[in-house]
Every structure is written in C-alpha cells, then in structure tokens.
Image 1 (cartoon, rainbow, N blue to C red):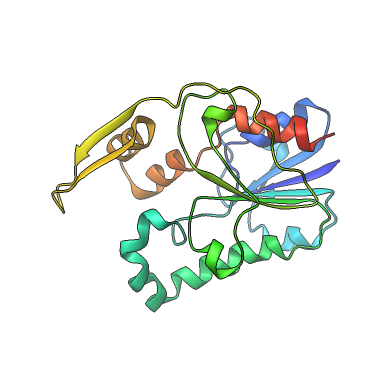
Image 2: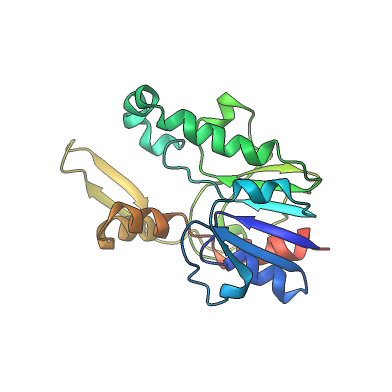
Length: 206
C-alpha cells in the first residue's frame, strides 16, 4: 500500500510499515530524525492530501486542542489558534481516502467533532509508559493490545506557579524539565511509542 504518515518527523510509524514492504512516507515541515530522508517529504502536508493514498495516518499537533492546556483556551480562542488547530485536524478527517487514522491527546475534538473510536495506552503494547492516546478511525479496525505491561513510574511535584501538587508519568515530567525550548518539549511529549507503531503496521498493514 501507498501510505502517508502525516506530521511525523521521527519516522517511527513510517519505518514499521516500510519493514512490512509498504510504500510509506513520513511528512513534516521539519527534517526527519528517523534516518531515512528518502522516505520523508519535508513541507506542507495539505497539497499531499489531494493525492491518492491507500491509507493516511495523521498526528496533527495537539498544542491548542488538548485538555492539559485548558487554562490557555480563552486566549487561544480569542486569537484564533484553537480554531486553526481544529481546522487542521479536520483536513485529515475529511480527506478523500478509504483508510484514515488520526491520533491526538484527550481534548476538545470530542466535543467539536465526535468522540474517538478508541483510547489506547503504551503499556497495552509492551512499553512501560502511560499516555492516553485517542484514535479516530475510518475504514480501519480498533487496535488490539499486543502485550500488557506495567504502567511505568510516576512523579509527584509541586507547581511553582500554583502551589498545587501534581502527579504525572515520569517520562512526561522529564520531558518538561529536560527540554530547553517549548518546541523541543512538544517534540518529546508527542512521540509515538514503538509498540503502538508496530501494532499499527501489523494490524492495519494487512
């Protein structure tokens, strides 16, 4: 199959489909970090949606959509950033393709469009991490867990701005504390875990 993996610079999913013999291409506005530039289309994904694809798997940015950033919603609604995020998400939902999967964090899409078909966790696919991952599906089955493992470590910390005690997955907390810029932080937090990527290729690439 000819497959577009949209908004993916890591090539984690792309490589799994390539391993199974599919003609998969990652696409992002930045260079790929996965090591296979010949499989990467650097640039705007919108024109690519007009091409013929057998499957589209999209990872649109959740920065302006996820509930973890709800305290910023009023400002983002006022300046239009949230609507831009919704419109970009819906480009994939309305794409002319028989098989579509859109991944995003828990957020406002459930109210603005519809609830996800499935919410999965990395620990259901062999990776000891917790990250609620929503999937909106068209023409594709729900992913079946492949290996249930522990949920991984958590970190309790005090928010210096609010004084409230928060509890987060350790990997998520470390992405916050170890990243130097907001873009680097977003990149670390949005990564696709290898077990989920492998399951996507094996279960959707038949």
